[in-house]
Length: 221
Image (cartoon, rainbow, N blue to C red; front, side, top):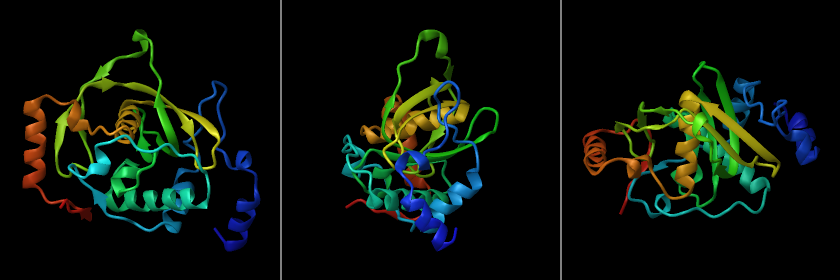
């Protein structure tokens, strides 16, 4: 993206910068993924990842009230950090920022790539007929090198806003469903290990203690 193109984009109204929506009202986050993710990442600066035990991970984050350039710089940094850590989703508190924002770059059950941003996410309650548990293994950048099986619904719907304040609704299936639930949990102060049994949580923390993160992390005091 050239500077002229970026300046023109900044002049557009927020609604004009929103991702398109389909006939059911869900955001279309599967188009131009490589270009969009690359633009975010190229503007951003990678930051180290906070790990379990850091207080910012264990409390509900503040609601995003101002959709400004500072927020969008944070989003850029989050995509850069996500790429460095080779993850599929990242919440703002995972880089030490107390705001309800997460970004994702994740495949679904059909291996279709999804890229996007959600501010102030709310996980929609789904009827029983739309909930089928998937007990696949789950990990977390804030619990590096650890994995555990965790049942979650294989379909999820999250409402919120994009980085410009436009209302959005995102849906996911398979692994992407797990990502949406996992990242929303983060912003309400929950890590996936908080949903495990005591034995499985202890085992996950043991895995973390014995492993070496492949990306920069913030050491706890």
